[in-house]
Image (tube, rainbow, N blue to C red; front, side, top):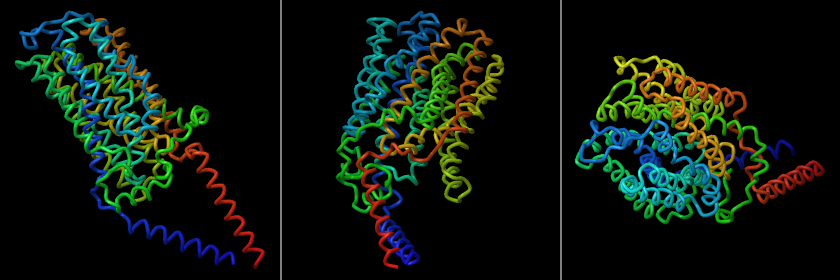
Amino acid sequence: MKIKYKNIKKKMENKEKYDHNKTKAPRIGTRHIQCLLIFFGLSAALMQRVNLSVAIVAMMDKNSANPDFEEYVWSEKTKSYVLSSFFWAYFTTQIPGSQLAHKYGGKIMLFCGIFFSGLLTLLTPLSVRIGDWKLLCALRLCQGLFQGCVYSSIHTLLSKWVPPEERGSLGTFCYTGIPFGSVLMLLCSGWIASSSYGWPGIFYFSGMLSLIWCLAWFFFGASSPSDCKWLSTAEKLFIEGALVTSAQPEHAHTPTKTPWAKILTSVPFWVLLVAQSAYAWGFWTLLTQIPSYMKSILGQDIKSNALKSSAPFLANMFLTLVFCVLANFLIKRGYTSVNASRKLFNTIGFWVPIVPLILLGYMRADQSELAVIMLVIAVGVNTAGSLGFLVNHIDLSPNFGGILMGMANCAANIMSLLAPLSVGFIVTDAKNVHQWRVVFYITGAMYFIGNLLFIFFGQTKIQPWNYPKRQLDERHHIKFETIKIENECQRNT
């Protein structure tokens, strides 16, 4: 009877597998359109952050920008305040934003974050003329407040739209919008600043693109497959059938209670938080300081500065696609497990850039080409971390992936705030290469420690607190009924 029970169970499992394959959606579907929209939305959000990094070079150097626009004489410390002001309030709305995205859906929160931040981007030139750097800091602070929900909204959307087997590739593709937005902004900003639009054109360009994206997202975006009117039945069944660990469709609009205590005592989550904080320190140190480093140490003008500053992020975007293909190949062929893949690519993204970063601190003005190569390696290979820690939130908890991202990103963006400020305190003389060397050493140490902890303590196993109490009760009931059936079968034999 025991053998018969196992055979019946095996047949049921095969039937479920067959039914799932029958409802398999086309390779390209609505979920890919949603991911493409998220990709461009994240690009728009990053453009709003990066625009000031290049614009400030033109704003403080009349000879390298359009002479028709005012030059601002700010100290290095003041400049660090301006560059870091976006993050002063950004981290405060991470957790509230994730809760709102969990409750009301990722679509509306992502729309609001980028729309209001885009409006403030258009007002940036006016704010500088009226209130100099102080009003500029206030405006950037407000932008940070609005954008605090962006990443958690995206993770919430991915947990609803992307099946587990496509999570690595589609999830990482969405976050490729980060280097894409950076490259687009860095490439265009030098030309815009030297044109008749001057440095204000940099803000008008990024602001208008953001509002155009908002219009497209309003009409075509959706919080979940059940909210999408033009999603085919086959694809809807495929997605919901694949997301067996996510919230059930009938509970999609019933917010479950967040297990805060269990999350805060979870070792894998804390390790993820540290890894994300280390990544944020390095990424934003390089992103906000590369234009200044290129000008002060390598003596590059605004046009070549923008071109060479964008080269590392262009490599970052290209290598993201390469690493995605490689990761899928290794997992599908069975060469690596999901857990091994996360740690392998996190190691590549964190530890490989350490060497070029240290070498970067020893570059001279006549070695600008070699310095660009070092930056390309450091920033380009760094993208492998996207296949490591960046999707690990959903690995640990598909139901609360957006909330985990909000919590981790809150801590990470404290680092994003401290990184530019630390550069302002360390680099008192922008032409002193020894001071820049300290900046690169600190960044390398952050990468090393963050990945070391992730290797030893990181996990991809779904945590027990992922399941709401109601689902756990159902699971216990099913298990209890199964045991009853087994006992009954044994008595009958």
